[in-house]
Image (cartoon, rainbow over all chains, first blue to last red; front, side):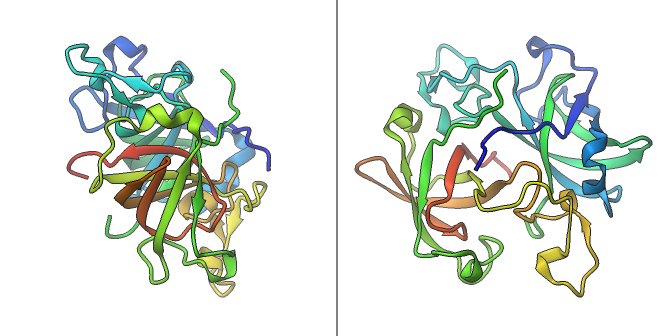
Length: 134
Length: 134
């Protein structure tokens, strides 16, 4: 099967660059943001309703993919460890995963979500409901 | 940036086909399974230890990518809804997300995990630690 990702939408956020972005959506600085969905995937939003708890999958398009060990949270005083033991955006497939609340749905095809730490322009590759009991 | 995924490992499981697979790792039928990591990505496992709670990202290589609405859980008596309101493997980017416990690490480069519902041969595209407090 083809392993090329398609972009289903794009993050619109007041966080414009990586230097100011918090590292996790649960940390101070995460904001209310929007996902503008590509019209080609509009039907996939059918039955979505505000209040939903969602998992947003992003593609860290500015990350490096050939890095296998990092200093945790970029702190050089901490020893490097394997990227699969961290949530660093630097990894072979730089997929971001963010748990958010769907605050509102605006026309056309805009999801208002919070809290989010991803920067403006980040591609969105999937949206799933958070599993019950999780 | 290139949007082609790389395969970092492969699921080895006694669940051999989709007809017998449970739909969620929290459901009866999910099993102890293994991930065999591609040696090219071995360094990414540095500092990983048994007991860790992990998010395993898989690529549902047998799923259809051009489906935007599905019957929830495949039950045709339930009305179709957008795939982004379901965890169906049928979606534009058929990424699977599974929360598991790392039971053991075996040589060479094998992670023993449970519980998992993905079928034998499923490609693995990322591994992250579950965020604290989540």
